[in-house]
Length: 238
Image (tube, rainbow, N blue to C red; front, side, top):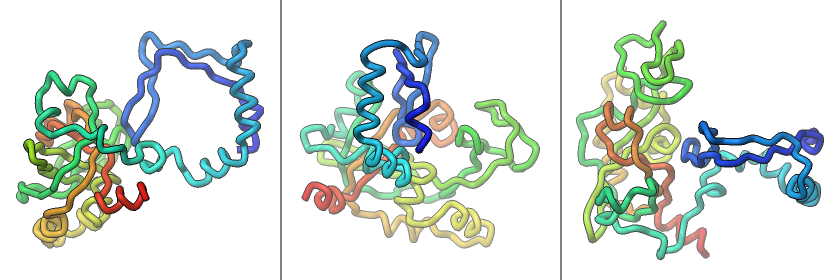
């Protein structure tokens, strides 16, 4: 962090804002990246950094760039969409929405984990985990178990099924991916336990359209980016 002040300033134009790892940036064919441009905005950014360097250093040490409470904090009630509204494709063209509802685990036959590519984290349904290539990013991989859970979310207007994967699934389930995998190997069934723990919880969710890979392998139209218990939301607001 001490050397950041000497690093070049980047001004990026026409980047894509993604919900991978809560929030991230990606280039596209029309993106432009200017390195150390001699413009007023570049000097303004350096001045801002110098004035706030201690706070920024603390944020880096606290990994705020990976903290959903910082990147996607709970929103006010007037920004929460009704579930029936996002269920209409023409109303969900923006691709993301905040919804609130009561959750349940309706489908209990599937596993609470999947074999994931360590590079793109997408599901790969292989019987072996050695010496294979990811069908999505085409890199050689050693797959690893990653938590996943598909929830039914209901409000007074309707219901949707949405999948949580990785860290977000572990947060909801309360069990880490390795333990879920080991339980299956030991023929210990945790699905009913998880379903009972989740049933009836009222939560706030930030959801997005699932990728083609997730829809094809998991059948989930929506993916949960982050979530908050309503009690947690009220505590943050207070």
